[in-house]
Image (cartoon, rainbow, N blue to C red):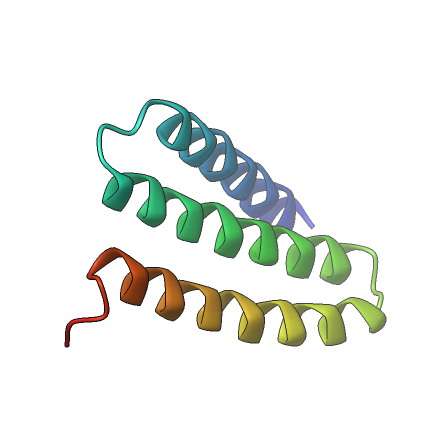
Length: 85
């Protein structure tokens, strides 16, 4: 359980760092990357807490949130490039 606690602390630290980067990011691309990191760190944190609590219901949430976050990252990247391929 100590390893899970360390991983939870690392995800929390990644959340704080990415939130700070979103606040002071010099460009929209930096903010988009930080938002992706924030989203996936939050999903990892949910998965770790679900594992720590031995809850099987959280993994359904993790799968759905991962799919939504992936589609959001793709659409945000598309919006930043102006629709160019």
